[in-house]
Image 1 (cartoon, rainbow, N blue to C red):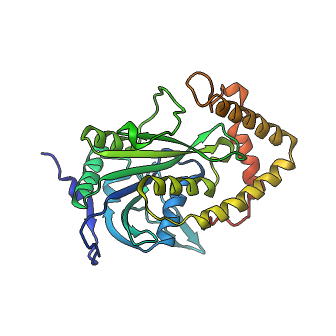
Image 2: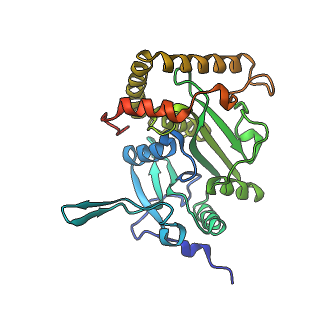
Image 3: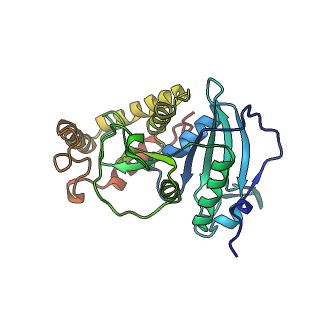
Length: 308
């Protein structure tokens, strides 16, 4: 017997102030397979802190997570366990600067019951009258931090993403729940799209607020929502200054960034036409992202990591 997907989550008891009972947009930023620069996580944290927010739904993480593959953090202090980092997978109702509602699904990506989880999200979409679903995260890419942010866009209908350049023609990658959700919604004829912000591969393990800011801008352009981005941009300017100091102090790192700039500019000059330009390069032509990232992380160690 098929289990009811609604049993995977519980609604909060508090009142929800929705004048017409509908929320047209659901944004999802799930932490799991990939989120370079912690872009999706930073975006979700930023929006829930800067905008009015109330918890609507809690998913049953005990039914969805494999604790042994992603063990929650605990603190042992002076002979006692003093804290436990409760894993969360939730839906919050937030309101933009003009009071318009939007649903934000965020937290840990499920390890288990993917199809049932997707079915559960579809019930939420139906209950709240969602017409557009947007997934966001960061991906590591051979791009320099000195050039404007770019995004890889995808959707269930081509006209949903407009003139965004296509950086990939055909590629097979490990699946994610977010990708499966978009795929299943497309099979039902629903509007769903996603933005993967392209993060410099050597900064993929750091918090990179510039990437989160770009995700906010993409959501705002797509939906017309008025979402704040100033704090992320200010944090990004500080990170950029720190990185530039590191680059200027290392000929090796400076040479790598210059090579990526040349590659990026060549791609733009080719107008992104398939076969003429690429934001990727053979692995032997690029330095180790881990090695470069380690240099930047060592340099930035001890600095304030709170991007808000």
